[in-house]
Length: 455
Image 1: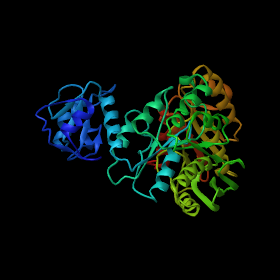
Image 2 (image 1 turned 90 degrees about the vertical axis):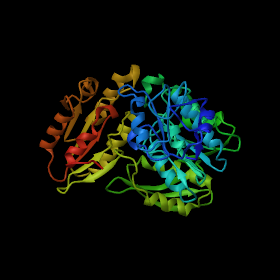
Image 3 (image 1 turned 180 degrees about the vertical axis):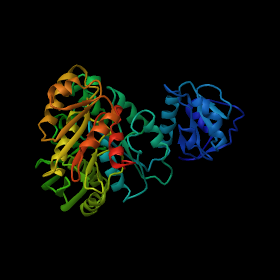
Image 4 (image 1 turned 90 degrees about the horizontal axis):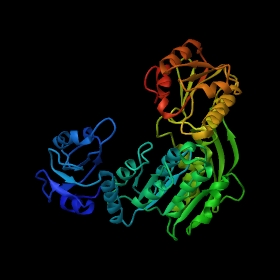
């Protein structure tokens, strides 16, 4: 974060200094919401959540060295008191961006693949200059400004992931850190119940390209009709990525190895280069192409892009992590989250990685699918039932529709039961996929089967 005296911080947030706060004291960062992460010079943001109130930990944060607390009520520590902590946090982030005119902001959104694409693109941008990107999926009204506030005078790029819980949310995030390049991956069925339909999801995702300036660039997936149509919603220049011949940045000669890792020829307007991904799943090609197209716009040569993509390892947890046990059992931990599209991709990866081997899957009913929940979950059950599995284990009390599609599946109530049933069935050389919605906590199955941490 750029250094800010408390007096300036109070001015930006329209806050009042209390608790003997010294207006000349300087916040140098980091900006944190966990008092345990506070350190000398940091700013502790007191957020009141469902389970804990950050205001109760203000004293601990300052005892650890925090310069002050951003709070909505007086605390027993130097503080900047504001009416709305989240609004103040967003305003602070916007102010910091405005004081860093040399920074190029790149926004990434889509129904699936945001985090992987962000991770790849951050790696590519770092070849040019210092880059700030969120950890994991820090992509909401809290994580987004916290990521922005990591930037300082040396930062050249911000690669930011923007999620949408409803129409207007991405537009709000884009105002915090106005993007110059916007990447839209796809419009799928994730959060269908919140939005009510794919057209509404497209409306929300397209807010990213609407936020671009005329001298900006919209990087769009030519293979997704709803994304391709977003070209009409921006005054920025448009470039396309994908597998179709009309894409400016595309893949050809695509193959998959026995571990489900793709190799392809990366083609750009200025040349081509071979890529051999270390990421698992054919769907990783789409993410790699999106990152490549944005990096090409930043000025990286195609040979450098191909090299970096080929060397990139997964950065964020529980996304197509493929791990082998000593006895040859392979665990595919893709338990971070799930929707019908990502479930289909994961099962395809399982088929490839498990070719000629016994295959198992542990899944749970998908959520946030609205009126189509029963229909789509039944479809997931049918898909899994037809995947040639030795055993399909479905976890949770809400599994009825999945079981209707997969009547031969084994139904268990919780993670512990799933772990016990799976452990009793696995033999050396088997392959198991673990995938479900984040709330199901299925990563714990993978951890147990691997005998510890699932990383």
